[in-house]
Image 1 (tube, rainbow, N blue to C red):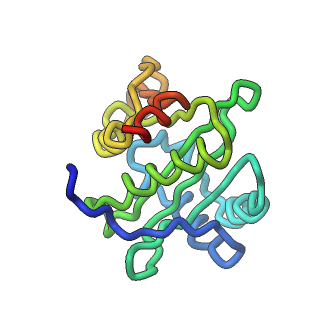
Image 2 (cartoon, rainbow, N blue to C red):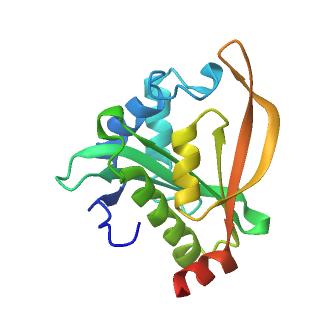
Length: 179
């Protein structure tokens, strides 16, 4: 899609003032349709405290995705996956009313830049339910490769779903950046 201008989003590091917004996303079962229901926390205060406790952490970076008007459109994060191996993991969520505008892909591209340029990652991973076509497309659009299918990993909607793991390696990132 050359020639297409990416959306003018901002990744704002989460502050205490953002903790309620981020916690409200993380506990909203309607937003996390593709996640196992038991994995979605329900204790707002506990999640809010966890969000606040990670502010300024080197190993877990939370961001609010702001759209071009400065309105919070979602959240994303980058955290250690296997610190001894230089692996980081990303996660992301755009609120339903802001989807299909390119915000998620742009946020993921920026997280990838942060992982390799600021955190000096060797590898970056992300995972999704096999049925979550939108998340899968975002990862592929951002240069990540399907690395692994973890069979029947997720208890989901009365059955089991495979979990897909995507990754991008440091040398792939820098090769892509040069092209």
